[in-house]
Amino acid sequence: MVEFRNVTKRYSNGTVALKNINLKIDKGEFVFVIGPSGSGKSTLLKLIMKEETPTEGDVFVNGYEVSAMDMYDVPYLRRSLGIVFQDFRLLPNKTVYENVAFAMQITEALPKEIRRQVPMALALVGLSKKANAYPAQLSGGEQQRVALARALVNNPPLLIADEPTGNLDPETSMEIMRLLCEINHRGTTVIVATHEKSIVDMLKKRVVALDKGVLARDQQKGIYTNEDKNSQIYS
Amino acid sequence: MKIRTAKYIVKEGILNVYKNKLMSLASIGIIIASLLLFGIFLLIVLNLDHNTRALESIPQLEVFCNYNLDETLVGDVEQAIREDERISEYRMVTKKEAFNKLKEKFEGNEDILEGYDESFLPVSFIIKLKDPRDSNEIKEKFENMSKVESVECPQRSIELISKASSWIKVISGILIAILLVISIFIISNTIKLTVFARRKEISIMKYIGATDWFIRWPFIVEGVIIGIIGAVVALILSGYGYRALELRLGNDIVSVSMGFFEMLKFRDVVLVLVLFYSFLGAVVGAIGSVVALRKHLRV
Image 1 (tube, rainbow over the protein chains, first blue to last red):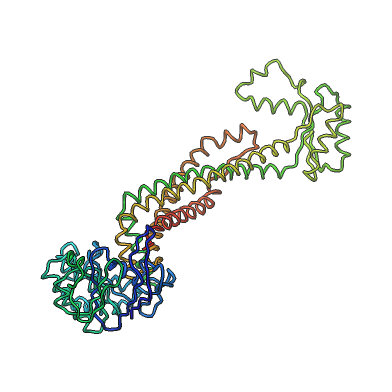
Image 2: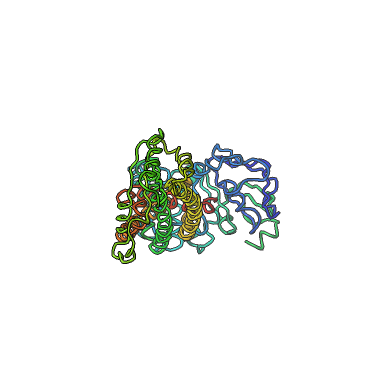
């Protein structure tokens, strides 16, 4: 599903964000990518969604060779991904329903399809009643659920979440995580970058830990804490 | 592209124009200004072109005899004209006729001519050539006759006008090109402001898998609408302006230039103006949008 082969990413200012990363994520997995700020979590995700291109090595996502991809194909890669961000990134002048429907409009889906899929996605995240509200009228947790619905409405095989709970209180964070687990149970591969210790420790999923751009740990049913002092400081 | 996508694009484009009223108005104003300037040049060129072409089609010369020739000597000149095979027809302008023409010219101020009669004026012959290319040779030939004072050759002034008009064409071409680049620059800057205001929206669209063209088209539609509105206003303004000029100056120009120069009627130029304005307005608007978006699509 996602594979990194000897991937190194060096930014033009000289910073090495990732060093020789080898990583394989299979279909149906739930993976936490953890590490302190600046450890390369975001770069890893950016390489998957082709926001950045690796300096060395190859990245494969959903059957695309992302590292050698033409810019014109990037939109089609992204349609096979659901992406959720820390800051939700909803369109402020569109209602909840329109925000979710827009992700389908972009793919030139049939209006009939849209009318069927959008309410389903909203029901999944428990926001059917707020379909006509605008993002500004919603709480942070609700906005993130709208973003989740938008990410899921095209039934992508892979969901990527970059600090999805970074702006939310612990209780709401748990809610979002529960939703991500449920989505994973339905067969979607989920990759979550986070530095929220409590959540990682509680869910006991596969943990990929990055430290200064190096893959420090890759552990099934892992927890956040270990000998790494840096990660404790930031956790 | 599917029809529903096209519908979405047009709807978004129109909405954008409406939502960014102030920016749209600024852009429309800029388009109007540059199109008007462009229109002025275009109209000058069109008029010059029309007149040189009209003049070029009359291969005429006027041979003026010495004013003190008597009739037999004038007859010699006439014979020389008659015998020249390159001349298709000729007409003699007598002293009397010439004097009457002069009087017409000074209409209202006839007292200037008081004390004069036709005797100081020369007899002249207006000759038409079979081939206007002979005009220089014929001019030379008659100028060398001792009985001939001078040979007037509108061809000369035609050459002057056409030379001038080709220069004006070159200069106005350059000016128009500069003007277009400037207006593209200004419009792309105004659209850049709306793009900047919506950069988050654009990046969100890119993250959820919108193609560059899906994002670009509504902005292009916006630019084209702005361009077309500008073109329509510019057309109306230049229409009124030209009409007013035509009414004020049309007859003056004809009389000052003694009929050599006439202004084109507005209805003769309106089609050219419509085509140029709408095409340029739309193209400038569209290119402005594309330029404005370039940076923000790289996500």
